[in-house]
Length: 435
Image 1 (cartoon, rainbow, N blue to C red):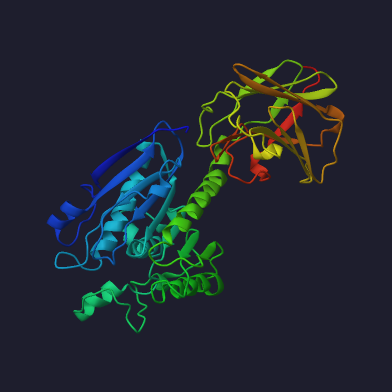
Image 2 (cartoon, one colour):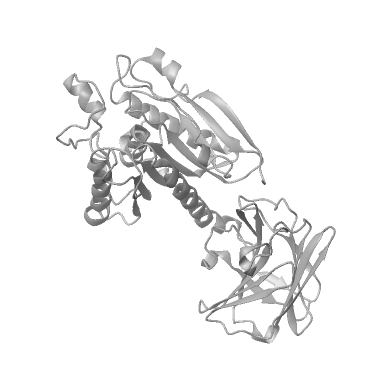
């Protein structure tokens, strides 16, 4: 709705200064990536995704569920196990693709410090290995700890069965009856000094044999043995190895934006807001940075008695067909206050003039609000007595859009991440009685 997208295919990711091993003709043929990215966005998070296929089959693709979500998706091919490639060729390739992303993603509006690595099945194994074993990225001058998070989906966490096949001269995609854990197993590299790790797998009853259990073992090893404090395990009941990707993609998108908000807010947080008698106009900003596309503005002032917050929305109301039963379920403005002692109050205002108050420890006061709709859009005005403002007040203003089931937030005070009451989501409010 807010962004258009472009896709560039078949970019070679091994650069001249990168070390190259194995069959170089096959490397030149196979080691290419596709990049799908929102146009004119800034600080976009990136998901580097590796396809599955048991390390011996498959090809790159952009997951449909990750499209149109304001995330850059990079999908990379790698050399496949067989006559032309063996371990660790595909691991080196995955690391080279990651190094290319760190070097070049800013050229596409991405933030090189917000690169997430994921993959499905065999691709999940590659994502886990290059994210957990330092040597693979180190050969390209990068650190595995630079990833914002590792997000493998139904990956093997012991030594991959295809590597066992290569050693034994066997073929096929059968799980060996005896688990191997050596330097080519993610389990071998469990450590407290790793990026956050989100592990996704299906129902143990119908998943690939031992896949859910290996992910659970890695989670337990990371948290209870290695002391890694940022491990999350998700096993989806009713989902198997073939369809576990969809629920994983949904959680991945949410986690990506939570992490993006946490990292970006300190960079873009405005200075304390000084409110005087003259009106100060400030635009809302888009979720990925820059001006909000709808042109919504917040007007701040006071009249000696009340703090006056007027929010002007130049676009028409977006949920015109249905009047939502609750203010926050429809098109609305949300205003949050925070005291120095972490006490909160929330007010919501809709285009039809309804006002909602939610008490999070801060008592309700003599608040007044009004709404105006016109051909060019709508606006709301909110007045709160200055005497009722908390000491060291913080404020957060959100313009909430609802259209066709798309719940889209924009936020003047800094990047909205889905957690309204995070400390960094508030801007300090200072009242200038002389101005």
